[in-house]
Image 1 (cartoon, rainbow, N blue to C red):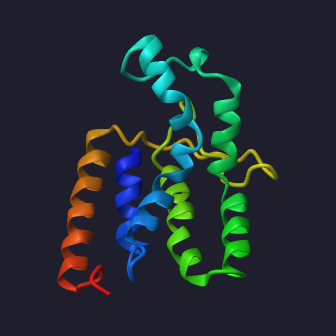
Image 2 (image 1 turned 60 degrees about the horizontal axis):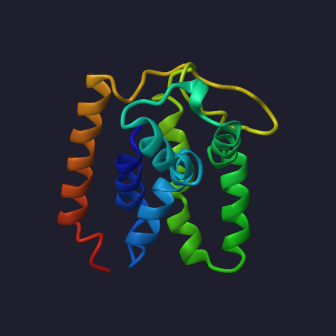
Length: 156
């Protein structure tokens, strides 16, 4: 799924009680902290578009596996919850991101290894760029935000 949609899902589900921006950030965090660190360099050197796997440095894949692991995410959230439960709730946008990536990443381009480093299990999903997935995602996001707006979720 695209990073922007991840942010919106995270904030839409976990961004209440004044934590909208924090949930927005954690919804995007797995991508920002991995491929997002390298992508601007690639754009400068190679232009826009889907990068070739051979051009992507190994450290990007390492960061991707780390940031897209449910084990890592829930460990971090558990540690933060000992200190700040209000922040920990907004951080749940991080594992939501991972769960949304699982069915919408193919095995050929950044498969999501959700139990890294314990297991290398992946699910060969339908890429989010598939029109059925893309438009369904868009419609579901519109429905979520309309429902949250009506419920005044973001005002508290």
